[in-house]
Length: 330
Image (cartoon, rainbow, N blue to C red):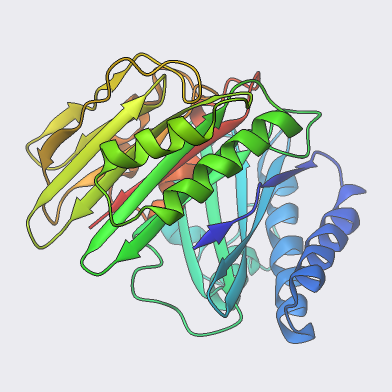
């Protein structure tokens, strides 16, 4: 699945509702989604944005990204706020409202979405994820996901991520081009291209292929993981400051990335093997998220992968760099 850089729509006053709806519908139109899908997205956007204004003192934000997976195309909308939280079991039932309205907002969003998930914590806020596809839902759609948000003022992110399935194996990559803007994005895109061309190799060999190709570019840091569900293993190789953790019911391991920069210095490229089972969860993030980001995992580890990524961003984005979280689970 390929995912675009996300964009943020701030929702702090009622006059922004119409613009939010227009931005999402425009994105859906450019992507080639039908008018029927555009109408669904317009209503979802309106309901989520209205909910942010009704239930939070300072509003919140919508984060939107487009998806493509072969002939399938779609759009993710994440609603994030740092308000007082809510009882999610009540709020997604039609007719339940804490503001005197008909209470149809989140119930409507859930019905209109092909995929839907929600998480809320008292005094920490809420995250809602809605996804629309133009074709049937894939069984693995909720098992992998991510979110890349450019630093404020940039349209392009120097961070890129991807998760590819090759037979019984899944390959995951998170790459962070040095700096931000166009040149960082170009370095990250080149690394991603080499990743796609070398999915028959081990993660350490993919890192070496990217290192050779990025000479003369801005440079990047990256981590590559290969998950083999049949063998119950995860092979991991990282170069530079990409943070990664592997979590399951009995195991919590920070994965090792060695010092270096793709295209400049890679004195040692080492691959590490770890156990993987049906309870396993792999999370990677760029340095746009706080070093304490993994402390937020426990509360959301049973949620869908896209929702986990959004919650980690909401709770831990520093706002001073491109921010990316990647999540893969069994």
